[in-house]
Image (cartoon, rainbow, N blue to C red; front, top):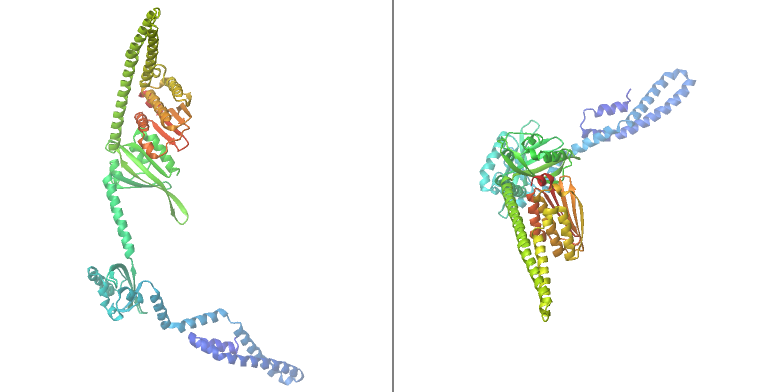
Length: 578
């Protein structure tokens, strides 16, 4: 049951606008005060009537009527007080919105447009400009009179004016959004690239009322994009000229993407697609194991940050080629915090370089073999011919000394003969030393281990530098070529120690390695001071050449003040077949 006040409020505010509702609530406020007062009076009257009715039964009916009116008034008051507050706030909000209206919205729009750092414009339905914000006038230097209608097109670059107007007129005719990039003339006469966008604004019936748009300065972005395009073009030209293939591999999904040049290197069609495992069938049998280890590291995502290796491939047409693979491991972020590994790199056909290197190594090996042969021949000639001549001369001097020794008056001749004999002894020792340095006979007669031990003792005696030799390898199975190479490396290393290291101690280790024999020479000298010294040292270059000819490995570890360590490894397969 609704009270009079409640019914009045409900009926009076029904189907009313927010503004009228606000006014109505303003009018009914004093009326509610009157109703509350009347309700209070009716309540007290009810009490009086009830007391009176107990004494005067004739007027009992009127008491109930008055009581009902009093309760109704009280219920109406309570209904008004307990009405939902959210509706009141909602009504107030709607009232405020209604008060702002179109005029206030337009004022807000103009404030925002003037504050924008970009050019804001508006046209009528036919496409003639009726508004520009201040940014337009600051940029172009035009006056409002010079900007209205279609006069604004004077700031367009002559090469863009016809194209721009054609696209704009088509958009107006078809009532579709408008977007274009063009050059705008600045007030100082320079032109800058802008992105123009426009949208039709429609009324409640769907008809275009006007157009609203924006012009954004994209000149710097265009310059950066153009520079990036030029760099990309040069890079692509360099890649194509160098025959370089590129690839991207994602270990988590097995996805492999490569460039067309990779297909050319393999001799397959550009449409050929394969996984990393499928590509193993193009790898030379002798390189399968090494590549398989690399693939396992890639799939387990244990690949190093950078990698670089070379191997042989068998193209689709059966031709054998050398390729170099160089790449890096990257971490990509996607789906916010999730990271994935991407392996990217390049593939280069290095067959020509490998052929040149092989020819150079073959030539160096031939020259070294010829040099060793010549050294052996010279050493033998010196040892045999010159050594025998000096020995014969010593024997003759000794015979003369004995003959004149028994005669008196020849004491001076006897002393001179003794001096000549001593000089001949020194010459014989010099011949032996030169002969041994050219080609130590102990290397041919007793093997590598004995030759290194002899070399260390000779070095120690000549220089006074302590030399430690530690041998844990049976050299009986090492062929003559690798033995000579290892001996020459040890010899050259000790020569460098004596000349440059300023060391007090050197150690030589000859040990077994999982792939062959390992030779290490380490000193406690001053080390190699600069990278330039590393590059210009012909002794180091000669060591590398010797080991490369045997398909071995050469390592140099040196820091200033911490000495130098040279390590070489010669594979057993090479040692057995060399």
